Length: 176
Image (tube, rainbow, N blue to C red; front, top):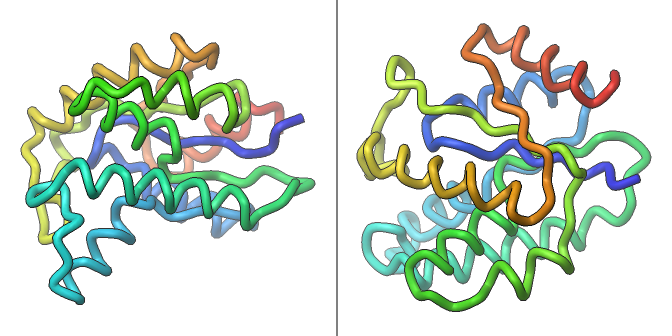
């Protein structure tokens, strides 16, 4: 059974906070590739930033997500990803029209159930690493709502609850 579980969805929807709670509970977590790329680029004056060169950013996000998966082997327990290959591939395909999802989607599968955090305007915050608008984030969320099921995944929408209740929801849906 595939133990790699993706937490995807709307930017600013509480994914990272949920992953932190799952990590606190002892589960392995993999931070979002995009945030790591942005942090590195900002510190090194790089240009692979979503607001400077979104195509380069998404290609780099795919590379980082693939490297994350390869570094983990086959875990015995759940490993939770803050986004992953599919998120980056969906963004790149949207921008360029390249058939990235058909190339990468079947070869790099995650657990059949993927969790999406919906738009949550009350907690959405722009910062140095998240410069896009809530509207842009909601457009991305709408695309992901279509992409994941089209690739054969079962989508569970994470309810807008406290972080502990959201973590309980994810684990319950996975049978824990």
